[in-house]
Amino acid sequence: MFESFNFYMPTEVYFGRGILKSKAKHLKKTGTRAFVVTGANSGRLSGALQDCENALKELNIAYKVFEGIENNPSVEQCIELSKLAKGFNADFVIGIGGGSPMDAAKAIAVFVKNDITAEELFSGDYKNGVLPIVAIPTTSGTGSEVTPWSVLTLHNEQTKRGFGTRSTFPRVSFLDPAYTDNLPKSVTINTAMDAFTHCFESFISLKATPVTDALNIQALKLFSECKQSLLKGEFDGIRDKLMLMSTLAGMGIAITATTMMHAMGYPLTYFYDVPHGAANTLVLPAYVNALAKHRPQRLNEALSALSMTKTELLELATTLVPNTIHLSENEIMSFAEQSAKQGSCAKTGIPYESSDIANMYRELFGG
Figure 1: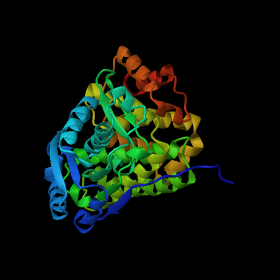
Figure 2: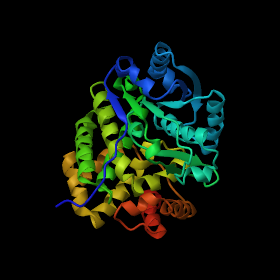
Figure 3: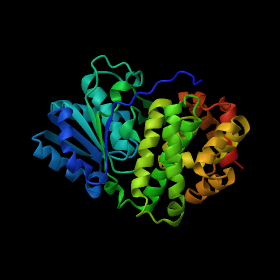
Figure 4: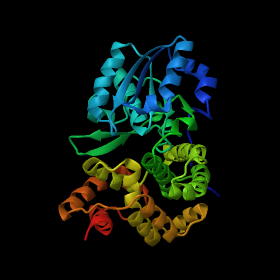
C-alpha cells in the first residue's frame, strides 16, 4: 500500500514551438491590464517579449513593460515595481525570462494586493489575495512556470529566501523551446544543471510521492539523454528536451520543494555571484556522498533512472561546472549557519545541524 499524499497543479501549461502565438487567447483568462516584467535583455533577445506584446495588442489587453529585473531579484526591487503596477491599475502580472523575472512577478503580484512588509511576504498570509500570474520562460532551468515558489534576495540577511502558496502558482504558462535556441553555452549548462538538481532533489526529498516520482524519473531520463550533448556543447538537438525536463522537475518541486543542496548553494550565489544552477552543482559532490551514507537506496534509484553510476554523475558535474572556490574557515561556519536555517534541509534525510553542513562545505571548498 502507498502512504497518503497530495498533488495540486492549477497551472494551465501550453508547450510547443510557436505556442504563444497559437494559444494567445488564453491570456484573456487572467485580466485586461498586464504588468510585464523581464530582464534587461532576455525578453527582447529571445523574441518572447515581442511575441507577448503582439499577443496583448491583438487581444486588446492594455500593458506596461518593465525591462530590468535583477539577476537575483531583491525584495526591495519587487516592492518598488509593485508601486508601478498599482499606478497602472494592473490586474495581472506576466513574468518573461529565466527564474528571476518569474520569481519577481510572483512577489509583485502579492505586493500589489497586500500592503505588507518584506518579512510578511514570507509568511504566506495574503489576506487580499494575489494578482493572477502568467509565466513565459526563456531558459530551461528553474521550473518556476509551474511552481508557487519564488526565491528572492534578502540583503539584510545576506542570503536568498523563498515563499510560495497555492495563490502564487501561475494561472497560465507558455513554454516555447524556441526562446532558448540562442542561449549561450554557459547559460544553457547552468540552467540545465538547475533543472537537473530540481528533479534529483525532488526525487530524494522526504516529501516525494508516487506522482512526483513519476515526474522526476521521466525528468532524470531526459537529462540522461542530454548529457553527451551538454558535455560537447552541442545543444541544437536537445533544447526541447531540456525545457520539458525543467517543467517536469518544476512540477515535482511544486509538491516536494527542494532540499539541502539548494540551501547550501544560496550563499555561493549571494557572496560569490555564482549562477544558481552552478552553485547547486558545486554542492552536488558532498550532497551525493552524504546520500550514499545515509540514504543509499534512494540515491541508487535516482542513479538507475539516470543510467549512471555515482562516479559518472560526479564526473559529469565537475566537468560541466569546475570548482574554483576556496572558502575560509570563517566563511564555512557562516555559510553553514545560514544554510541550517533553511527549512529545505529537514526534507533531505541526512544530518543537517550547522556542524554537519560545515563539514560538507569543508569537503567541497576547504583545505
